[in-house]
Image 1 (cartoon, rainbow, N blue to C red):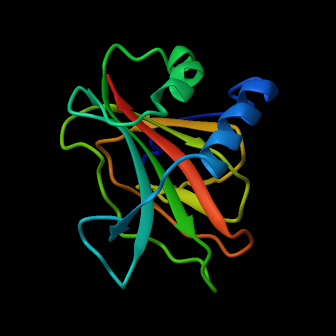
Image 2 (image 1 turned 180 degrees about the vertical axis):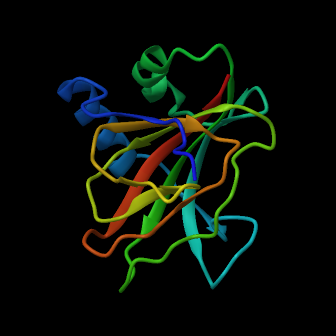
Length: 162
């Protein structure tokens, strides 16, 4: 199978901007329960989300914390931005593969904390969750997330954009 095109950028933000973002996301951001990580549930999975932006509407009083990330990503237009919080599990659980969009669009997953969870691309490539790492990929191609076992939570911010 051909390798998918993707790019991983470590130390995406300066240490100061990363620490500011992480502090707000881990201590101030309100989280909301979501039953099922993808449309096709495979077990009783759940996670917590914070929806920053969707359908041309800012949905969060915390949207401003995204400005350093948006400046670095440089999207022409945002489609959706949400933070994901997966709780620790006894063993790593793989969520069902899904597409963020049904049409060609860009994706960026920005990892808030280091843990043993990861993102799996359609070709089987595993991108480890490393704090201050950004993964760029085509979000209309199937991928999936996992839980982690070594930290209480796994947190990332998912950008879909043109």
